[in-house]
Image (cartoon, rainbow, N blue to C red; front, side, top):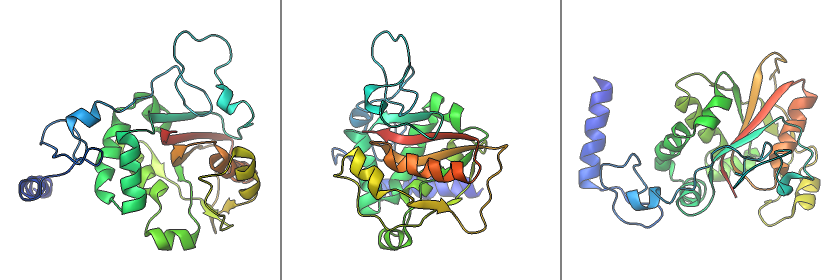
Length: 245
């Protein structure tokens, strides 16, 4: 009964306040599978499918032979086993992430979950895993009001229909400056020892852990988190991001 009432209330709200596409700002009709992307913009989502780079998840185009590592990741030396991503972070996918991170647009989480649900290779890696969100420093989380990586991990857990669970076992020990405009080497230097195990958290070496973040850029933040988990005894460790860009 509660689900029926919630669906009715959402439908009534859409009539009074029709949802607007976060990319083109046009109205979003009821059909199409997304609540905040119109059909035209949803068709522009650049889905990642195998084959892809085993480290960052970026797709390979054309025939593939040899090692499945892209030139972008050649110098990363990942502390995790594999990375997968759902979409390339451009156009409407970037609009979803920016709406969430910079405009407190929690309403787009339903669409982010829908993207995860349509990414079979991502769900395959997430099932039966402990999902570890990349943590924000407490100061940054207070400013933003939430940790977007934790919200994405919740979306991913729901997309697996309960086959994965949240494991917030990391904390950000150093309040680093924004890494957005730095190259990989500078990011690595800034992030050295920036993450540690959360108080009273324990790693079970027999479990599969998956780091979750919004975007894979250089991989420096994720690798710093991975190193902290490795030091704590994590044996099986992978990475999932919503987007790559």
